[in-house]
Length: 247
View 1 (cartoon, rainbow, N blue to C red):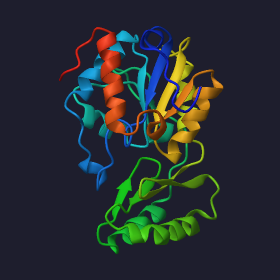
View 2: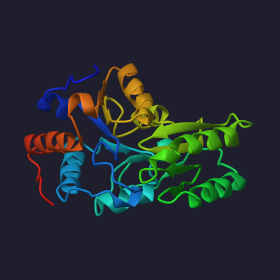
View 3: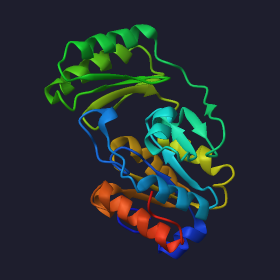
């Protein structure tokens, strides 16, 4: 199923595993990555659904795992961070770091220097790659794209991904679709039907993977309108599950 097709709440709670993107899905896009605001009720809603689905609720994000945990504290969920380069199958478990290459230090230095020359631009380091954000400097997006494409041109282990007013360099081997499949292969997800919600081009692989496994891939703009719509849907699910919906 695709588009705006939502399973009935009772069916979802009985049969599905829930996979959620973070930026643009659970929270609104902010001027800088650190400036996003988490709705105070969201952690408790996610915790309620995590309990009701037997642990089968996970985040799939380009963010580092530590960042996701900090935003949703004290709740810790299963997660695929940095597009699946780090996998945590249980909220109280240790992450598995997937064997993927990391960008050379020279690339990091060049990207950081490029961002430093553009007022408002931000260089965001990650374990295996990095991103250049231009939400406060949108005119720099073409310059960043050209520079980063030239940077990775000689090494096909890496690719350049567009995001919300940003460009990210990441390993080819890690993507959200591979991450979703990896989580679905084990407890507590195995045997359930995947439902993924995302909003960006980086989420297309997970949408495709969920559908290929007989599940549902939903785009925020089509199914919910915006992150507030996603949160309202999750709150309704938590209420249906009989859990608390307030922090």
